[in-house]
Image (cartoon, rainbow, N blue to C red; front, side):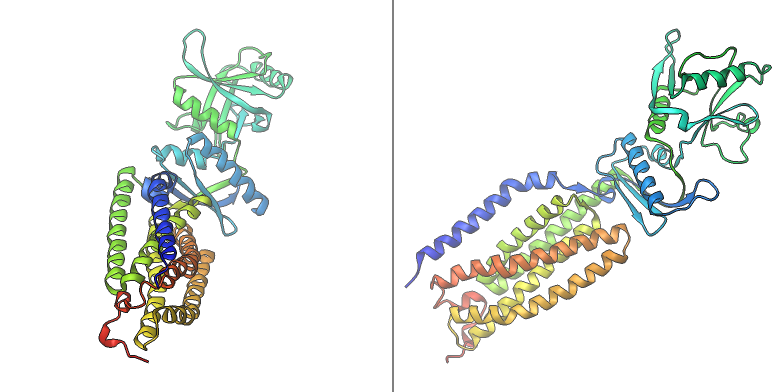
Length: 434
């Protein structure tokens, strides 16, 4: 006797899953964060070196550097940057969607160490004398030319410094403002360079009774002024960054890579679905439903942990589909073996599930261990592949062991297939009667 309630439950659940996937997939894909290889952008790997002799690069120094870089990335306006510490003294920065990569490189690596010196390179003030967030872009009230206004912590100290400089004989009465002064730099040599570290060398005629220092001149454009003030407000790097590797991907190339990868992935997944339907019939149809739900769950989890989808990540997702299919194939083949031995559909289903469970568990565990090793020892792109693979394995186990088997149980227990063993991919001639 056919149990229509079981069949109705199966079709209601399948319809609900398909409606859920169909109505929310657009939102899900829109919320997915793309890596620079799919969106275009800039990646650089820095080796962290001491800024001053005697400084130690320890965990605290690396953490402070990471924070300083994050502040600078905010200056660039990049959404969802990927900044991470690798090893003991390396930091990898991935900025998807960056358009001006030379600007990004300059903002990230500049130590932004501000210093006020005389023409003999003697330090008079440094960045610690600048008020927090004390740099801003302004405009000269007379010429409307852009300038950078610096607010000092101590009005009295600034007055004393400018008083001493004003007493020097011209042209020595100059207050020279340096950005990233290094040992060996001199005013005489640096002032001759086109891209000089000297951002201002204004003459001081009289003491300045104010807490404001002005950087102005022909080199100060509105864009450069905004960039300079943002870097100063972000704070100086506590270390020196040596670039040891960098790469860039254009937005056009990233979009092409995404389109081609998605097209290839859809072809591959469609071929898998067709194979399952032709060879395993009912079991294959249930596998297709659970595989669609598997992809949906993987993307939800991936977005939930704020992970960034890259080309290796898509490859891992497609590989995960293959592994999920493999788990379904193992179960379907076990069921076919039981049907060939002459068992009823319900008995074959139960025996096939029981005997395939251990094999599926072992296969998933060994792959999970491999993915864990890849994540622990791998670099950024390898880690992305490993994360997606581990998520895929976990979701594969859930969809195959629970969802797929539950749906199959509803169909089999409805008793509608009791005399339709060939619908499971078994030939009539292969079935032996008990």
